[in-house]
Image (cartoon, rainbow, N blue to C red):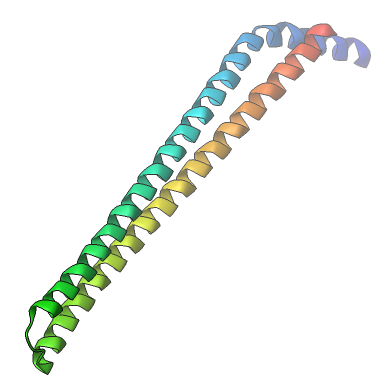
Length: 141
């Protein structure tokens, strides 16, 4: 009796699973395409990050140049002028450093989100592949 029930159950699963094969394949393929999209977004993010860092480096160079030009334009440097301008220069540098840190933190969060999405899509692919394998196996029996 147990063998007959087991055979009937397997036959039922094979019939049911046969209809799942195309769905599982589509699901796996869509997850694969989505993972390719995540890779493209990751590459674009890396390029954007490099561009932003170059812009911040350029701002820093311009700030250095502006300070140097201010100092050279003065016939004499009195201590009060140096102190005031040094504070302004340091404030501007601190603002650039804070901006870079905020951008880097945002980029790290985006990278972590993309990694989580990629991991979820990998799991979907794995589940769809497993479903396809089981359906194929049950279909053969």
